[in-house]
Image (cartoon, rainbow, N blue to C red):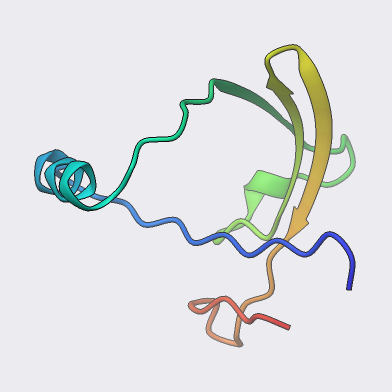
Length: 84
């Protein structure tokens, strides 16, 4: 399969202990600055549903642009992301 991306995002309340752990157990490689602009089609509001199922993103990373469409798949209760 081509261009498959699996991303795990976890919200954290306090980053101090995590930063300390990473400083002691990992090597810093680089920092990136990204700007994302999100759009919804005029006839279909991507963010008008909860949980959000789709997005269309225009990305800018160091003046290099990309466009990204994501479509999440949830179980019947809308709570868990289904990986296919």
